[in-house]
Every structure is written in structure tokens, then in C-alpha cells.
Image 1 (cartoon, rainbow over the protein chains, first blue to last red):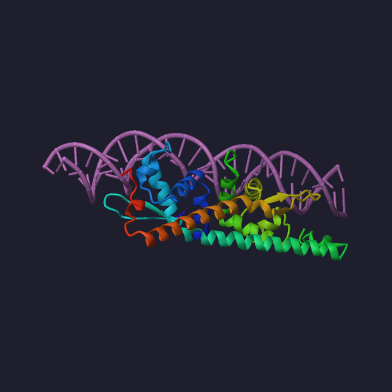
Image 2: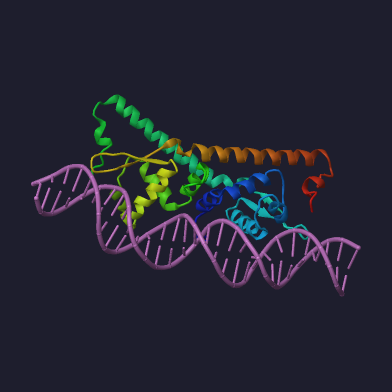
Length: 118
Length: 118
DNA sequence: TGGTTATATAACCTTTGAGTTATGCAACTG
DNA sequence: CAGTTGCATAACTCAAAGGTTATATAACCA
């Protein structure tokens, strides 16, 4: 996971409901590890690990505030993943549109569905 | 993974660069397993597995076309995950905005940063 | 019918992920 | 100083992810 690209790290970080819940809670303000651990039925080390994953994905940053290291959301951490999704959806929809118009124009578009390789 | 929620399945599916590459290739049209396997340096069973993950995430559907079972993109498969990201980003930005205006109005907003618990 | 092609499944291996408890360490507090 | 609090790390378990090869199934072709 260390060697993966940024988009993969972000999606992987978001793929865990526990981590998404942490992000939601952090949207109300910075919180420390112990505070995050309360109310999750999970141990403190587990939270630390999840925070490390989120930090690696660029979704949170850790501060140094005396004895505490509160986690803070990084809003732009979503940018790359969001861009990927937006681009993907755009391309897919565009293709479906082309396909529909093709279907409307000609009446024998089967060759667009049947790959030449098979 | 079977028991996970839909958003988690989608993000997990997108977290693998191989699967994202498959999706990109599928955006040019339906493709069968063997065709997808060509050019990926991966075995055919691996592709079948990835397709199953993508199908479970609602990102592709499999057709039955004679002997072949071509995979087709499902555009709306991204909807839930996209909605989560959009909602999250909205909430985060909103909070940062509140924080900034708060900082601009009063000059002692430290209590908004220091959780009462610590 | 027999052979080939497309796909799925089985069995296996290795790596990673997510969690635990126990412990260390640094910083604050009396 | 001693004690406590916040967090990190170590060492471990267990399950799942991602890949492989070998094999089964099923449809097409001659």
C-alpha cells in the first residue's frame, strides 16, 4: 500500500466505514486519538492506525498541540479521487450517448457491440 | 466483503488500479474476459475475479451473448460513492468557512479549537 | 461426434488489513 | 520528584485480497 498511487490510497481509505465515520466526526472539528476512540468500541491503537491510513491518503493532517496530536481534515484530500470519478463518469456517459445516437441513426449498429477479436 | 455496505464496496472496487484500468478500457465498449486479459499480463481467472468484484459493486454488468459474457459499464454505479464524496466535501468546506468567519468576528476563538474533553 | 474457444471454479499460496493486548515514551500536573 | 494522561509501537492473531495453475463446464464449429 505504501507504493500505491494517490488515487488508490484515497479510495482504499474511504472504503472502510470506520474510517468514513472518523472523517464525519472530524468534520465537526479537530479531535485527538483518545476522543475519537471514545464511542467507537475500538481500541486506541486501532484509531491510531486508521488515522495513519487517512493521513497517508492525504485526508487528514496531525497537529502537535502540547501533549496531544489532534487530527484535522484536509479538504483537498478528496480532489484527485473526485477528479477520477468525474472524469470516468463523463467518459462513460459520453459513450452511452454516442451509442444511443448511433442506434437512432443507423439501424444495424451491431458491429459496434461485437468486438472484432472474438 | 459480501456483508459490507454499497459505498464501501464501490470505494473498495475503485481502490485497485487494475480494476480502474479495466473500467477505463470498458468505457470504449463491451469486452469479454479473454479480450480484457490480453494486454494486462494477468491470467484470465484474475480478470474474472476482478469483474466479479466490479459487478458486485454495481460498476459493471455481465451480458450473455452466445458463448461470451461481455462486461458492460453501469454508469449509475458511481452514484452513491459520488454522493458521499460530494456530501463530505460540502460539510468540510462549510465547517472551514464557519471557522474562518468565526476567526474574523471574534478575536479569541481558541475554545472552538480546544475540545472540552482534554 | 470431436475439437476448440470462452468462461468459471477449485485449490492453493503469499501479502496485506484490521483488530487485539501489552508496553514504551513524552508531556503535563501535583 | 512521582503520577497520570495522550499517543505510538511491538508483537501477535485472523481473515480476506489478489494472484497463480489446473480443471471443469458450456457453447460454438467442422
